[in-house]
Image (cartoon, rainbow, N blue to C red; front, side, top):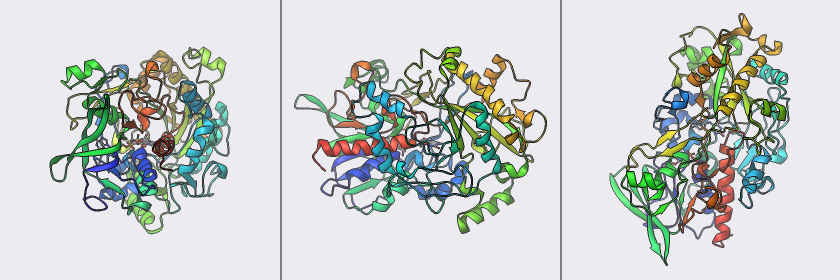
Length: 581
Ligand SMILES: Cc1cc2nc3c(=O)[nH]c(=O)nc-3n(C[C@H](O)[C@H](O)[C@H](O)COP(=O)(O)OP(=O)(O)OC[C@H]3O[C@@H](n4cnc5c(N)ncnc54)[C@H](O)[C@@H]3O)c2cc1C
């Protein structure tokens, strides 16, 4: 049932959630042999769905027991659409189900984190933790699989590499991005996040996924002072008055295997790493959060902080889809059982072939000029976010986002044909979402309001992004792989050309990039913070938050890299605070 023998009732550190941050933190804290560390994880060990390690099997893994599969309430800003919001559930968290893409973002984002009042979070201070968490396994089978060794360490737990199967149309996409002022670069992970290349994935030398479970936890799983307990859903944090101050002294959890409700105490700290949706849910269920929410669900008020669950930022994407030549697309692989079975056999025998790659491992990051930001009405709102990428171009080897797990009803059934998609993701959203309660029970999902495109500025940037996708698609270097008129465009089709129909198309097809962050921001209290710059919850002793909830501003890249950085830095801070070095 759980690793490393029996349970005690007290540990030095009790960590809630064994995801990206939770496991990285746990592994670093348990390096100190005198300290006992317990991780309580609601999900199971990931081997219950063995395919999670196959990069190309992502669509088979989503929707299984490794996925919470949340649904948003109807979203007014998207014409009342309800969206499935995937989230990893298991030892490894969302790194068991994510798209493997690894990035860090622009140095200016972290300099902004510091300027907003967070001492020690500027780029120069966080870079060592990005490096410490990663290592690079070189692969050079296709152009633009480049990297700069100085950005990575020799033995970082999260191995990065490239897939050994690359479609020519993906290389052509990188070259077509020159038409929209995005040039090729060697590496994006040294603070310069503008440019195009093949993207590094969290892959090992055997072309298998490296999750936080594989990279951080498995190599040290026999440490006697480290207990990871799956099927253990934490219900609330125990709060008590200690020496005149409010303190977190332990947690209550449900041992799902035995059906019992148990308590564990923490002699040093309780640390919430339950992710961007469930960390604020747990705070609220424990009596810390917006007053009205606590009152309306009958929860005893320990501490009112109106910012818990608010200010959520996220990236979203949409595509222009083109009919393509069969050998430049993976459509037939995903549509034909015989091809999928052959690919599965090849991967299981040799760890080679098309399943070494998730859909679309290629990207480019674009920075808008001052004039462009002004003409889109975004200059003022993004005044301190100009030195970064405002959006990302992605290439997919399929009809996207109508991948099997998220088929959209308006798409026709074109199973015998092949497609590629050019996609854009908004990276500097002005709209803000929020997370709140639906009930006062942890068994019920939190209410996740993504609120994409609520801001007119985001709508204007999205329209700009859409038009530039057509420019990319029309480049000869790419159109040699598409079929038919209009550079192969079939969705939305060239009749969709005025602002209102393009916006309607975007609203009705966009999907999350699954990067939600910032629901318990690290900021000064009077600036809307929930944690201070050592990640301690304001007003409570012995309680920290260490996960994607604390990001004060979302980075302009995929965010698992920044989450690992936060966990590495936090582990060091905790060791300093208790003289454990
Ligand atoms: C489908 C998908 C694709 C993605 N693709 C990419 C990508 O390609 N690149 C990238 O960089 N990022 C990607 N991400 C995002 C990235 O994986 C997450 O941002 C990151 O894992 C967040 O880390 P975390 O530690 O904050 O939370 P998680 O990794 O989500 O961990 C939280 C853990 O807490 C557990 N938990 C929750 N509530 C409780 C409770 N009450 N008691 C006990 N345990 C609990 C959960 O089960 C989970 O294991 C993707 C995410 C998804 C879902």
